[in-house]
Length: 243
Image 1: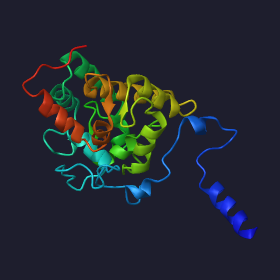
Image 2 (image 1 turned 60 degrees about the horizontal axis):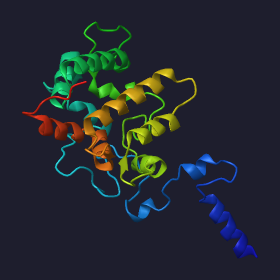
Image 3 (image 1 turned 180 degrees about the horizontal axis):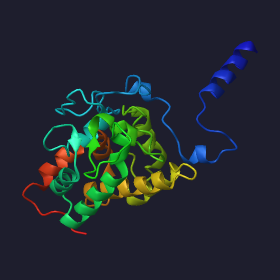
């Protein structure tokens, strides 16, 4: 009887579903990640691994930046560690957005995220974003794939797909991305709700395939910024996406 009791307690301790919480059945999480990825719950500072890429993006140089810093470093065209709206604009043009969308997106991005990254209290009219402080610009209602210091959480990337990828296990539709942003909403966090939807809407717009899916690999590489490098190569010499 004692052994049975211990087995029941162990089973309950590892349970991922609760009988009276239907959402835990609807949004399933992976329970055997350790089989495919060492220490999936360990926050990674330099690389963005998943079960298919245990060491992160092949050929991508982290340059001793955190994964969140790498995410924005693509837009730092003069490599001085500071982003200005014109650099973000040119970066958005390089990955395939037309001038109007690039201008609006760059302006909104710097209006929203410049001030939190400054060292002092006085805002700068030039709206710089300091990459060394980009972790301070992490907003709420997100996927939790970055921790509060800008490290990458593999488990949360995997759970994104186990919870929301209904049609294909390694791809997301626009509706599934919308469901993800709805599922991550924190109460009364209007800014986070809007920022999350705008961000994932742009990702879908840029990275969707001919069947209307965004692949897990594109989303994983979004987090370390290598997706931007790939999009820039894909669109070099081509026509920017028009609204």
